[in-house]
Amino acid sequence: MNMRNPTALPPRPKRRVLLCCAVLLALAAPSGAMAAQETTMVKLIRGLIASGALRPEDGQALLAQAEAEAAAAEASKAGTAAAVTGGVALEAGDVRVPYVPQHVRDEIRDEVRQDVMQQASEQGWASPNEVAEWTKRIKVAGDVRVRNESRFYSDSNSDIEIDWAAINDGSGYDTNPNTNLDLPPLRNSRQDRRNLWRVRARLGVEAEISERTRAGIRLASGSSDGPVSTTDTLGGGMEKKDIWLDQVWLSYAPTYWVTVKGGRFGNPFWSSDTLFSNDLNFDGLAANFLSPPQGEGNWSVFGNLAVVPLEYTSDNSPSASQVKTPNENKWLSGAQVGIDWRFNDNHSVRAAVAYYDYKNISGKVSSPCLLYAGAPGCDTDWSRPAFMQKGNTLMLLRDIALNPLDPANTPTPQYVGLASAFRLADLNLRWDASLSHRMDMRLEADYIRNLAYDQNAMFTRANGGIVNNFGNGGTTTAESFRSGDTAWMLQATFGDVELKQKGQWQALLGYKRIEPDALPDAFNDSNFHLGGTNARGYYVGGAYMFDHRTWVSGKWMAAKEVFGPPLAIDVFQLEFNTGF
Image 1: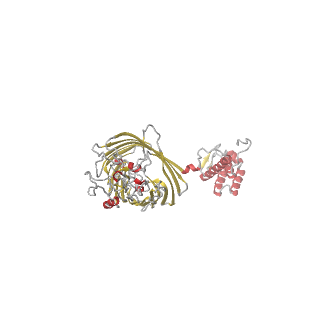
Image 2: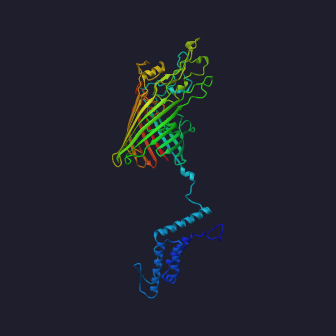
Image 3: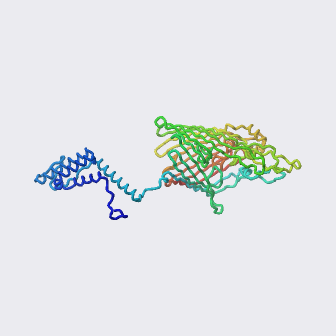
């Protein structure tokens, strides 16, 4: 009943539904009633057939039933003991329930549903499962991690580990002992740090704009604006923690096998954390290619391209000079091609080769710089890295002119830059094997070579100003210089190589060796040897998923220097993770 008008009748169903229901009710009536209505029913069914309300074959079946029912009723009335209709004996007083074909019942049900839905739409009935259309195109995802971390330093480590990043972040370090007797800022190298409680939180939204266009935004925690970690250390007097814009991107797929993405996004390459940290995001433009499976799904080819602006020259640097720094932007260009090959149900291989070209990131010695006369800076200050960890060979950037009136007491505040150029070849391999019903194995290898490494070119570029990566003898000559151009990693994982369900587990064992100038130290994993290059050692760990999307993991990393003064750092991490 319509509540707005209590006297109004419900909307009239479609004629076909009403007439079919009438036929069914009539056929379901007792046999005596059917006999009285024989002529009327036959005419009614014939009329339905003629009007198109019933298909001829359905109408003929109903007509035959009606005639049979009438004959049975007449026989019963005359005292016949039994009537046989369609091979079934009927007793006097039986009620006949007719058979209606399934497709007829389906048509009636669909038409009734359409009438009800139309009435619900017209009258604004509530739909309990109805949600806004735009919510169906939005996906929200995030994760939370709580970590207990301890860092153990060897007592035999060198106690002179200069924090070059702190020097570059400040106003430089005065290298003239006549005007500065202070040591440069130094890293901790001997005092353990135990039971650091640290957290990571990430929350992202991805929107499907159309079949081809998508967009995403992600927020993340982090104790600094550095690119390689989104982990924040608790404590600090209960101060609130920072939230950063971790990702913002827009993608478009012109075809099903190509996706182009721009903005700030996750690593577009397949690589290990030996080269790029798992928390590292890329700025710029990337394209990903994936061929359809070939050979009945046994193999496919993929490719990745990216152009990444690492740092732009400031528009107004130096701020107190009429002559500004020319355009000296820094870039990373990368290309990768690989193959996925599943050669049977239990074994698959993935392999890729990549080339990364870092443009304009090497340091440059300035022209003579008149700081004593009030110059605001030197013309190559821009070439110092925006971010660095540790390990790369460094060089002094400033050619500081001495005050002719007092040359011995002229301050010489210095910045440092990278002494090597970087053009990397990277080979990644992975083999997945199913050893048993509950035991899988994954073997991974990553080999990196800096094709631009040249020791002579480094000393020429630095003009004698290289400041680190020398042997223990204390000399700073080319003969005592120690560096290298190669990095590699091997890792084996057993159990469930990817944790997806409660009760799954995994164990892993790996080894890394990263020579000082094999790759830029700014972008790789910040946990092994506490980040950077010039590190070698093993790591072992495991994880167990004890609840839905929730797992606990532990990892021990033991690493020390490849060349130079001793610096051994062991790190233990116990983590609780969940994702949603």
